Image 1 (cartoon, one colour):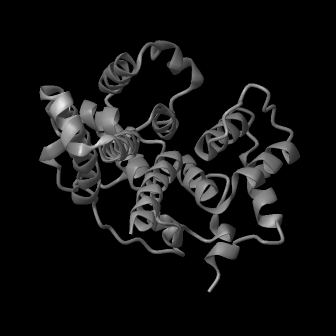
Image 2: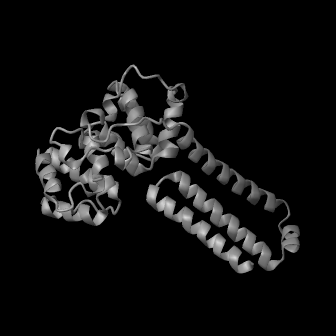
Image 3: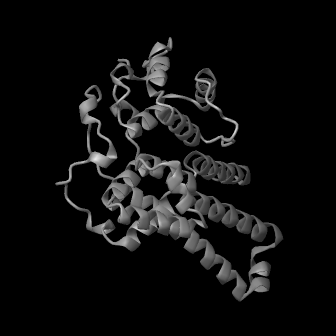
Length: 274
């Protein structure tokens, strides 16, 4: 029985670790730290004698238990926010005209009171998006590399300046829509077929398509084939590679070359067949 509990504990830690590495979001990092600490505390108490150690720790044990409870509550709230506040909008898979850029969503759609407040927007960016997700957000807003010079500093300063810049440019609504698309990306089955992608397809759509249909190794090979200078991009995150690739090609007006390379692949559109 103890062996089964040990296996269950190990699998639980591995699950949280995998989710943190896949999503790169603070919520799963908090969950991983909380679960690992709770299991280590339980193992510690069980090994050295629970009653004796509880008596030895005294009031300090309740401080540890409270911290673990708070971590679990923060993780659960972050996960529930993503589920409860996720809009369930179906999209046509083959009609590219219906797969819109998040910046061009219907302006007459109902406003969400829950994120109208500036503080709530800041909390969404702080707790639901990693720093790399924020860079994706800037890309989806269509901002240039020069804009990043105004967004330096710690994460909280970065977010405050990001929102301030969006307000100055009248893009706060666009920022809210784009952040929702990053938290809940377009499902791969709802993306258009590869042959429907064109040079003037929305940059955000191309970014989602590359992330959904290409592995990190395939993206690195694509970067080499397109002769994109990758010396300054040491990240091993898929979304970072995609953002770097698209930014370079848009600056050099070579997106058409990327589309041709994707459509010329022997396995082109394999994920959308059937």
